[in-house]
Amino acid sequence: MYPILEAKKLTSNIYWMEVKAERVAKSCQPGQFVIVRTGADSERIPLTICDYDREKGTIIIVFQPVGASTYEMTSLQAGDAFHDVVGPLGCPSDLVSEPVEELKKKRILFVAGGVGTAPVYPQVKWLAKRGVRADVIVGAKTKDLLILEEEMKAVAGNLYVTTDDGSYGRSGMVTKTIQDLVEQEGKTYDVCIAIGPMIMMKFVCKTTEALGIPTVVSLNPIMVDGTGMCGACRVTVGGEVKFACVDGPEFDGHKVNFDEAMQRQQIYKTQEGRAYLAAKEKETHHGGCGNCGGEK
Ligand code: NAD
Ligand code: FES
Image (cartoon, rainbow, N blue to C red; front, side):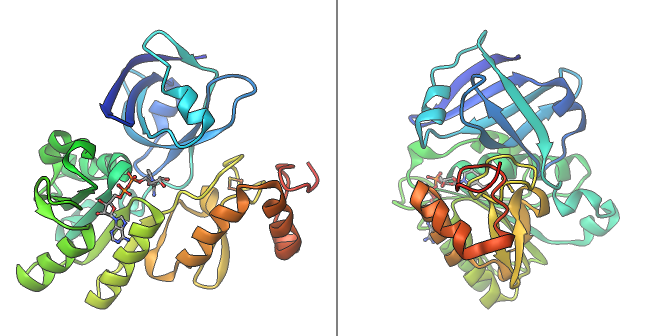
């Protein structure tokens, strides 16, 4: 069992938990994720690691209820426990394998959208610890849905907060701030790392492509096993089939087929949709999860 040491609400629908998961905390890197289950028969929920404390043996997870299982998680309190926490899964962010001296020469821009602010935070913090201060844009629909502002301020070079409704910080979506920074305020960037809803990442990539800024995105399609077996998290990147859980979650955003990924997310939700995908994708579909009627 994996005890919850602290649980709190960051906004009306975003939850924060500190979970004892010693082996994960010991080896995880920014960019990686875990799969949690509340009970032995519960659904497996992939969540990016928002922070970790190697000495305490804890990780921080941040989530928004989007279905029955994440809704069930909202009732968990300090003293409760997850049945399992599997990880760290996925590849660490490319940043962690680059020489720090090279990173120091780079002008790095992070773009965080909504709950996607949580997985951006460990990357910005990791860089700050090594003396690399990145610019960060955090976008939220409205002031009340903004998370981790103070934490991000402490580790970012410049923090630009923007709300869709203009209730706090700048006004408009993150793409407007990217454009304003580059076109009006004379900023230049060597790389952009964008994490948030798929639609946001799609439009960030359109914006940065036009501005000539290479862009990395962190994809979070539906995942089942998280180990490359089931095929649930299939995406197309640069015309090639990739599985976000093992080949990613980070990819070159300018090569991701976002429309296909968003459409597949919808189709995968129903039994009929999964059977359709299994038939369409044939031997590249995998199907080991049994969800699509494929062999277990
Ligand atoms: P949201 O809908 O509130 O959007 C956050 C910000 O993204 C907005 O404030 C806006 O600035 C920007 N944005 C949204 N649509 C845009 C568009 N069309 N063009 C330009 N910018 C746009 O975000 P939310 O409700 O917090 O997001 C929840 C989603 O984020 C879920 O679907 C969840 O799966 C996903 N998520 C992704 C990751 C990841 O690793 N990629 C992590 C956590 C959550
Ligand atoms: Fe990636 Fe199953 S979740 S292949």
